[in-house]
Length: 341
Image (tube, rainbow, N blue to C red; front, side, top):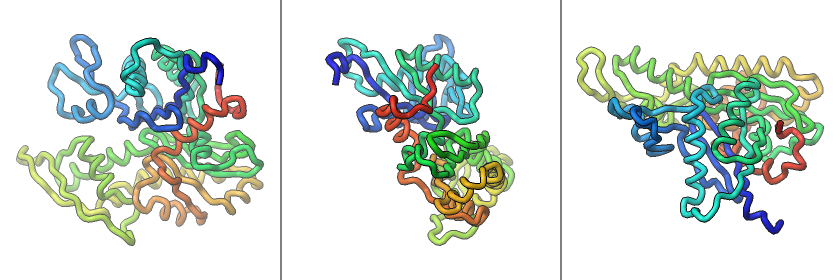
C-alpha cells in the first residue's frame, strides 16, 4: 500500500434501475432502492433510498419521489447525481476531516449508447469521482458468479434487472454477442398492476404490485413448492372504497406470461447469433442467471424447458453484478475490458 493510499477511496457501484449497491473494502456498505424524494419548491433532496421508497405513492403536493434511472440508464441527470452523492455519504457518515479522492467502477447495460454512457460518467464525476471506469453488466455478473471470463470458453449470462435484461455470450475477456432488451422486473410489476385492475377491478400502487411479485410471483402455473395465497389491499374501481382480495401464484404466472415470453425470445435470438464453437461450450456449461428478476419462482425451469439447456441461478443473484464490479475494481490493471476514456 502506498503512503497516500488512504487519500483514495475505491468504490464499486451497481447503479440499477430498482436498487443501487455500493461495495467498499469488499463489503456491501450500501444497498438501497434507486429513488429520491425532493421538495418541489426548493428542489432540495428530502430523502434517498429506503426512506424515499417509504414515501413513494404517499406524498403530498410539495414533495415528489423520483426514480432517476429508467430502463437501466439515467433519465434524470440531476437526481441521479444527488442520489450517488447521498449514497456515497452513507458509506462512512462520521467522516468530516477530509474527502478522499474517489476511484469508481460503475456497471452499465451492454446496449447503452455513447450519450447514456457519458451521462453515467458525468454524474459520477459531479458526485466527486476523480477516476471513473465502466464495466458492462453481463461481464460484471459473470465475474461475480465466479466464471473465469478470460479463458477461451463460451459462457452465456442473463442478467435480469429492474429496467433491462442483459443476455451475453462471453469468451476471452470480451462479449462475443449480446442482446439487451428493456424488459425486466419493472415490466413484471406493471403487468401485475394491470392484471389487478383488469381482472379484479382493484387499483394497487407500484409498491403493492412489487410486494405481490415477491410474495406470489411465478413464471410457471404449477410449482413444486407453491407460496401461500397473498392478501392484496387496494381501491375498488367500482365503489372507490378500499378492499382486500386474495391472489394465488398461478394467477400471477398467467399475468406475467407475455413479458416472460419476450425474454425467452431474446434468449433464443442471442443463441442464434452465437458462433458454433461457443454454442458447443454453452451446451456443456448451460446458462447462468443473475439479477433480481432471476429470483422469480420457476423462471430457471421455464427457460430450461424453452432452450433445452441446463440453467443455473447465481448464488445471491441480487449482488452478483455488484460483486463482479468489486472484483474488477481490485484488478483494474488485469481487466482490459474496463472502459475508460
